Image (cartoon, rainbow, N blue to C red; front, side, top):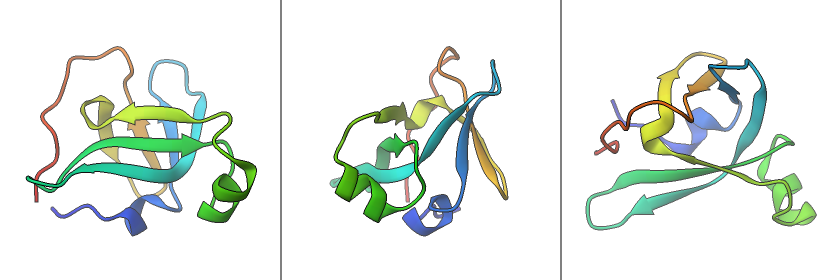
Length: 89
């Protein structure tokens, strides 16, 4: 399945251990040679404009290997779990 920035933009990222909200996507790091998503950058507020205008403060970094499930409304993240291979196109 091909993952795009647009499918993440309305989803909240949640810690599967505590149920706490990490935030919303503000940016992605992609490995150019393979097209793999490496990291996802989150901010507390939804939307690109807020993260751009408010600066980089309160930013959380999620490695692709920490994502466990992408649902309709949320993305479940396991910051303590075993690594998962990067997403490839």
